[in-house]
Image (cartoon, rainbow, N blue to C red; front, side, top):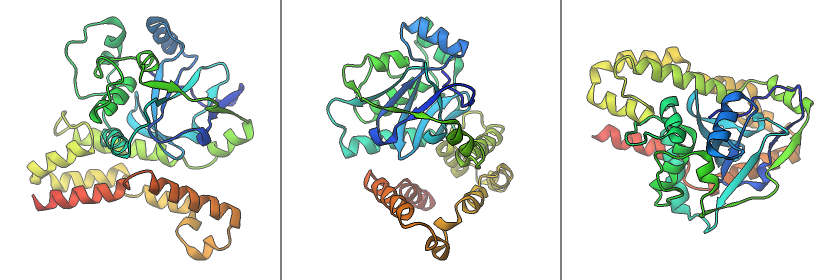
Length: 300
């Protein structure tokens, strides 16, 4: 269930982050043939689902697997439908934490074309730990005790759109010009580099155990197979997973050096700091959560 691609040859739009909150569900489509097939089969005008995780970041399941993306780089053709849905009964902090923890814990999980197809052609009895877009979101909300659809394991974006627990949000897209598209094309796409590195790491790990779907699975496997430590440590290095932070630092040095930061405009600095504070207030910091998890794991 793939989304639109960002080719600046037509009129495009992107998500309006000012209208969105973490936990919002984004429904989209594209002009590709596979998207049209999904729309026809589900009798709807959408074919893909994503979840808004934090400022300028969504998480979804595509043929790359489950990964995060920068919303500023997601450009949709003007004629493509784009919706955002939010719980009618506002989501609690605990529920939101559970939802986002679920999707983040599945980063790197493989995409299942077969099971995505089963959603629209039947044969839904069995399901695996692999993901597709609408399953990821429905299961995430189910993990927080919120049943958006009858069957979280097999549902389509259209099923999410029809959920009585959700309501549409207005003004969720804004037009995007060619200059903005080209600006982001000219800069390193850190989320894409992270997707590539994560997939390289997990693909290597799956040669030892095909059941490894995400980083949590990898941790569990290593806890029971310490003889693999050296091999998997080399996988981390070879994948590039440990060096992406250096590219980010080169891209935005002012975020890491107070002397450089002081040369930035006050308006830009204030906006950056406000964004950070807002993100911190949205829920537990995922890096703190991850560190806590590894501390617990180290004592087992």
